[in-house]
Image (cartoon, rainbow, N blue to C red; front, side, top):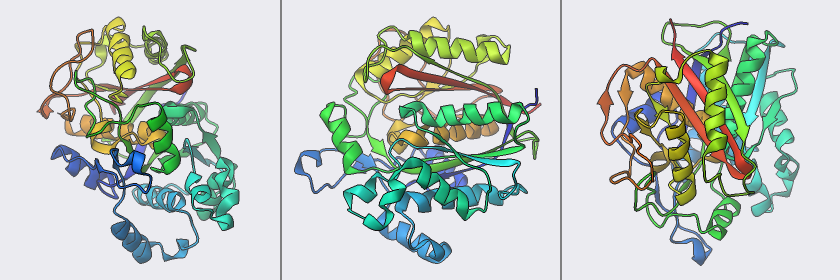
Length: 381
């Protein structure tokens, strides 16, 4: 089996349009979450991470004027993929290159805005085909839409396909928007925070939503000594409830154990965990229990949700890229919003930026329907 590496990436978010811009913002502990102005009065309490529309429009007018008929999300995908590819020699039009997409709601805003011209691309596969066509790729794209683990699962699927030699390169890209549909859904669950969310904190009161696109170029050949190896990935479903996570954390714990078994390494090697950390009561408690049963509760842990909000289909890719940046920089980022533990088991939540060697890291994710996933990352030998 071949080794698999992430050889280039991009985060396209309200914190910046490149990975480097995002990383600088994160190192300065800058959050993009702010009060959200809605025409629906019941949602005016919500906080979210959304693009500045003037800056967004100006960027695409200057660099991607040919995308004037594309949807907002399609523009985000094209910009993110293009920037990631600029750092490689990968031929996006080759049959040996595949596109894998991660999204939960896709072009849902086209229905909200009654945009009949783009209504066909509300279907996730049509969205993916449209973006893939922009890069001249001949292969049928793969769509991963499995709630909040979609991004991590997309990376896992891509890793498996490259490892088995079916493709030389896979462009893994994820994205979602903050829409009235998603905000209303989380509002109905009473899961939205009235302020910037506080993952794992005793005063946490819900999640913030966010919008972003992110891309990783996954390859069988490293392009530099800085490339991070994707050692393994695994998923497990606890089948606890359509929206509520397992109270014991057994599904996530099983995904973590399976990832370690596939990597053929002890979990004690893990030096950093970038958790899902939604700041909802049950998710954070479940994750803490899963990490404790996996003997990882002492490992430095953080969440990115107070920086980006929950970016849904993009989250797993955005946060995996952040984890890789932490490994390359040997820098643990403060878990923004955390002050006092609000979970029943000990958890080593990072409270200040800290420099330390990081050779192995883990990214976890959990979502509706009882789905759970874990990735193990390793510095290139």
